[in-house]
Image 1 (tube, rainbow, N blue to C red):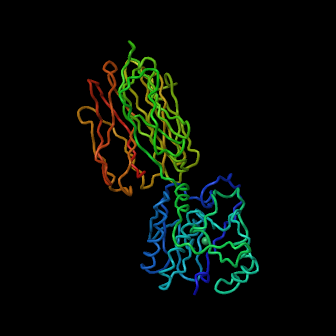
Image 2: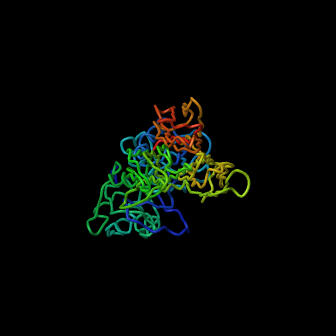
Image 3: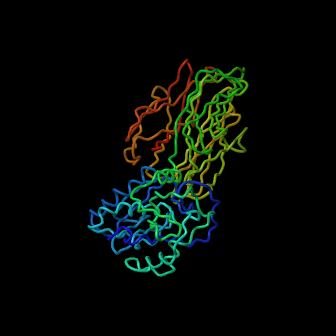
Length: 484
Ligand SMILES: [Zn+2]
C-alpha cells in the first residue's frame, strides 16, 4: 500500500458562530479561538487499546511538548479533555478545546495496529496538532495550489477513503478565510499538511507526507503556547534620588510584565523619615524596562525586583489598587476585586505593594482575603504613618503547576524551608518573591532583601537578609514557585 493510499485525516472545522478574531501573520495556521488555556494540564484518557498502543501514542505525542507550553496528563479514570479511541480505518481529532465534550465519546480516533508502527508517528503528531488547535495547512487561502478537481475527487471518493463528494470538497477545496487564521507563509514541510500528488494539481504543486514537526511547526506552536518567563534584577549601588534606576529585562515576550519588590536599600533625607519608593515597568523599542524610582526625600542605593512575564495568559489575571490616607472606617483599606473571567475552581491570589509612601514608622501589610472563583478582597492594613500604597495582585489557577506560599518572619529566625514535593512542578521551578509585609525602624534606614536558596524539584529555602544596622522587626512576603 503506497503512502498516498492510507486513509487521511477527517478533521473538520467545528461549526462556530463566534466572530473570528483579527488575523495576524504568524507561522502555520491555527484557529485562535480553539486554543487551550495557556499552560494547561490536559487530561488524556484511552478509551480502549493495549498498553503497547498507549505507550506508542505517548512517545510520539510528547514531541509537541518540547515546543508548546502545555502538559499531557494521562489518566485511567475520571473526566478527560482528550479521549482516544483505537479502531476503524480513520485518523481524526477534534480541534483544540472542542475536544471537551461527552466523556463517553472519543475526541481522537487513531487507526493504529501492529502493522502501523513504522508509519504511525506522523499521524499521531498530526492528530495531536489538531488537538492543540492546528488546522490543515493545505486549507489556507494562500497555498498556491490549483487543484485538478476531477482527479482529486476520483481519488478520495474511491477506496480506501470512500468519501462523499461534499466531504472531499470540504476537506481539500474549501479554504478558510484569512481573518480566521493566525498564519505565516505556506509551510510545505508542516506536519499539518496532506500529501499532495503532482497530478492532483494543475500547476505542478506537490508535496510528500511529512513525518516530523517542521521548524515552522515548532516555532509556531511555541508562539501559540509560549513559555512564561520570570527572573529577578538587582541594581548596582547607584545612590539615586528622584531619578529612577532603570534596568532592561530580558526574556520578556509581552508588555504583560508584573514586578514585585524583593529588596530595598534606601534611607530618608527628611526629618519625618519619609520613605517613598515606586517599582514599575515600562515598554520602549520592543523591550521591557524595570524602573525603581525613589521620591525626592528618599535615596535609593540598591533595589531588587522579581518580575514575571504573564504572556497574556487567559488564566492569569493581575491588577493594581491604590489607597491613600485613612480608611473610611476601621484600620484597613479594602477593595473588592472581580476577575475579568471567573475561574472554574478557587484560584490562588498573591498581593503585594509595588509603591509605598510612609513616614515616622515604616509599616505595611497587604494580602488577599475571601478568595472565590469570581474575585477576592484586597486588604491593606493601615497605620497613621502609611500615607499611600499601590498594591499589585496576581491570580492563577490552583493546578499542580504553581506553588504559592505566604510567609512571615521576625526576630532571629528570618529564614525557612518550603516543601513542594506534593506538587508536580515538572522540574526545578523558577521563583518569584515579593515583600508584602514590613515593619521597620524608620530611623535606621531600610535594608532588606528576600533571597531564595537551594531551589530544587521538591523544596527550597528562603532567607531575609538585612545589614548596616537596619532594624527589621517583621517582614513577610509571597513566594511563587513554578516551572517557567
Ligand atoms: Zn488532519
